Length: 191
Ligand SMILES: [Zn+2]
Image (cartoon, rainbow, N blue to C red; front, side, top):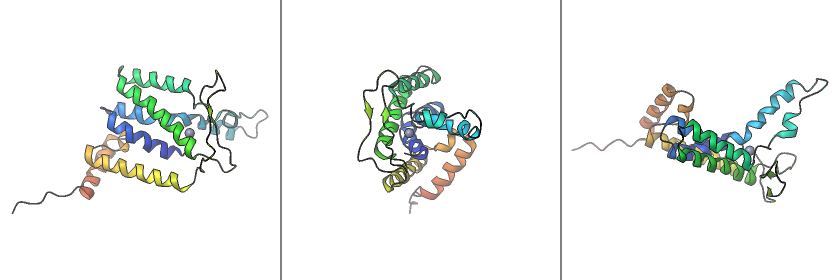
C-alpha cells in the first residue's frame, strides 16, 4: 500500500499507545520505515544516464521487509524512547502491519505481487505473497486510507493531538483547535 496508508495505520496505533510525542513518532514511523529503501529511486534517477548507473531502487526496493529489519526497528524504538518496552513492542507490531498491508494490496501496474522475503538474507523460506492481492490503486486502499484519516481526526478531537505534531507543535495546536471548534458538540446550556 502507499506510504500515506502506512503512515495513518501507524498513527492509529502510535497515537493511542504513545505517551509522549517521541513515542508516538517512533511507533508511527515503524509502519512507514519498511519503504525507506524506496528512497533508492533518487540515486537511480540521478545516475540513470551515467556509465555505471546505481540500480538501488530496481535491485533492493522491498528487501527491507524482513524479520531482521523488524528487530532493528524494535531496538531503535526501545533505545530512542529511553528503554521503554511499550513503544518498542508496538513499533514491532506496526512494522508487521505494514507487511500485512503490502500483502493485501500492493500489486504494481505490471502485476508483480512484490513477495515479502521475511527471512532475507538468511533463508528464502517464508517468502510471502497472496494470489488475491489487489492493486496499489484499488478502491479498498482508498477506502482504508479515508477511514484511517477519519480515525486520526477523531483522535485529534478526543485526545488533543494530530499527526501534524510530528512536524510542528504549533501547527498541531492550531489544527486541533480548529477541529474541536468544528466537531465538538457544544454543551447544552442550562435553562
Ligand atoms: Zn511497503
